[in-house]
Image (cartoon, one colour):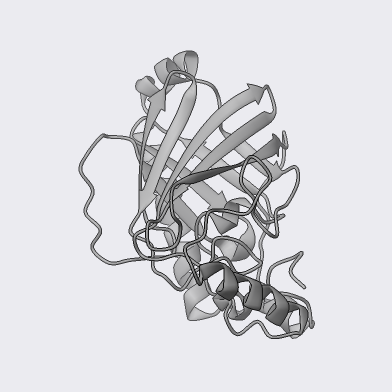
Length: 244
């Protein structure tokens, strides 16, 4: 039996195919040079310890502005009571960044000199990071934002801005504003262990920048599998695994 995809799913499949085609087209001899001088981040990765409620590196709550933590705690209580109306991913809309880096779904990193792609298992979402040092304009806010990257020694530093406010920082319901800037520092700690040090700066939501840390394990030989969020909903399961 042939699976029929929704228009949105077909569009994402086409987007991923287009991203893959561009990445392949860009890979010339320069790829070999970069592979010899940069850490190899390519491959499929899975978070070692999924995060539901994000804490700072010190293990404390982020420095919320007055009133914001109350909203957050109300959402946590609402989810426990079965109310997920605040979470657009429950109807299969994008969880956004940085939340996609916290959930227990694998993703693939594809590295090219001018662009790096993150291909997520969850409902086949994807984001690309521009590595050309070009000035990128935010034409319209999106769940993935606009990302630019650079190498700082052996670490890949990715700055993302231009987020829509409807997404959440974590699955518990942590809010953010359209002013949020996310800076990720990816560092290969071992052959198959990748650290992502995430700095969140959002002056409308927090009194100051703060950081959190997650690690991923590479899965040699693994491939990104088809994932259809609607199938989980039809089966009575959470749209995002691990959410209750």
